[in-house]
Length: 127
Image 1 (tube, one colour):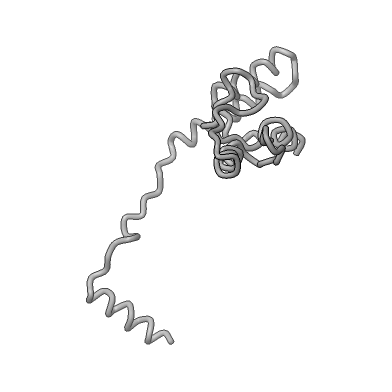
Image 2 (cartoon, one colour; image 1 turned 45 degrees about the vertical axis):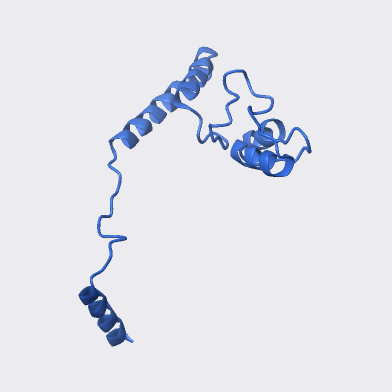
């Protein structure tokens, strides 16, 4: 909750009207629609991490390289359980790489007139 509050107050706040958004995508849309200008970078962000293309909310959506460098800095500072967290996150990323996407081939296929009649008959019979 503290991280999200920080992001809203520092990075997702409109520089012109001070309205707070939940994501940088929301800020870009607000800035374009309300102020009729294009937001090119995230306000108050570190150089190199100020892209408006990355959709971050809390700890979700952080690029893997940035997350690993953050975890390594925490480990170097001597914080406990950082290496275990890093290993767990890497395992989850590896598992998600091996998952096959679910493809439904039978959905959104046009039905023949006969199949439509059969479905209608079954539906009417169930009523």
